[in-house]
Image 1: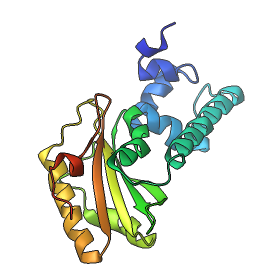
Image 2: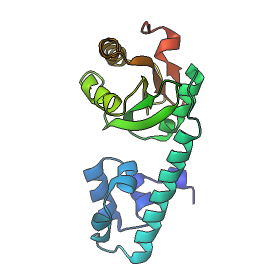
Image 3: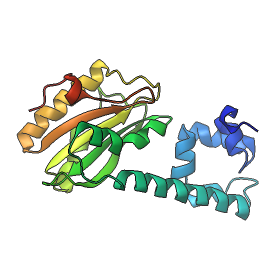
Length: 201
């Protein structure tokens, strides 16, 4: 069986009736959210969900979380553009767009990374306040933001550039260094700083 050719519904049907898989995908929008963000109670309530199937899903969930933790913690010091791109490389595998922040200390060590928005991320309506709430609460000396383009094309949109400028303006007012905005895509990832789309101080 070539698993790559299966739909999300077909893959989930290995753990539950396909009708239940379809309902969950409608509610959660992506197989990523079904596997990582459904509650144990929701999964247990699915008709046909056995203890064995539930344990398999929970095991896969734990594996995915540990893999993500490993990939984000493996590189905790960000000195260069490539370091930033490598740090957020895990976004390449996401099927939906996500916007993340990395909070850095005075030595450019990442002390926290967090997803700010998930789904169809419209950069024109993302409020920088959401980004800086995380930065301020975690006493950021510097920040990097990143998002993925599931289409595979890393070319920044006008909205991507606009958000970058807004974040730059707020960071200057707050005295928090805004180091970069990177876009992760399967056909190549870019740094808006390195490519000169926005002038970083």
